[in-house]
Image (cartoon, rainbow, N blue to C red; front, side, top):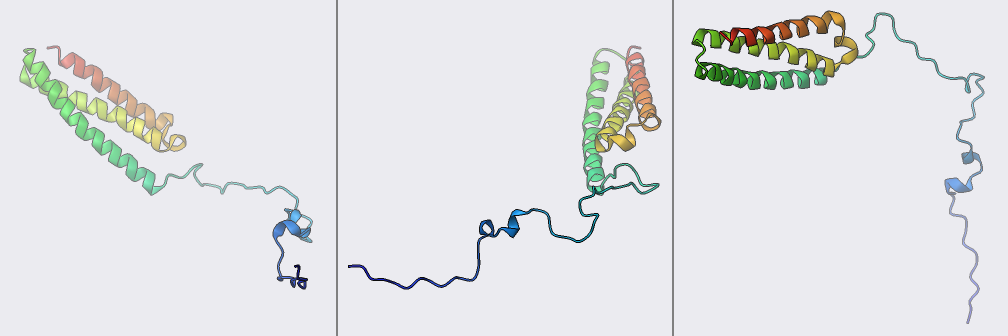
Length: 145
């Protein structure tokens, strides 16, 4: 037995796929510049890329951890030189030169990782790397006495 039911009234809304106006992704604007590309120009004097304080804090923390590690490496190197019968004063000097060399080279590396476009320049990186390499070479020569 079938009972004829009256049709249900319209619920008052339609799904977006049913609406023909929603198939057009661009809004209807009377502006003639609506289809023109957007041009962004940099502000004069602004840096190319900005380094956030979060990046600087992470880089500083990494550098401090490296300094602590280098201090233990310095102590191990001094102990190694003293065992090899190098004078303790020469071994201590060689250890501090090793610490300074590793610190300067890692400072250049951390700055380059933080913001390469700002810190990886000749004026910033070259002095750090040169002083670091000179200190490392001096540590090897001082430790041979």
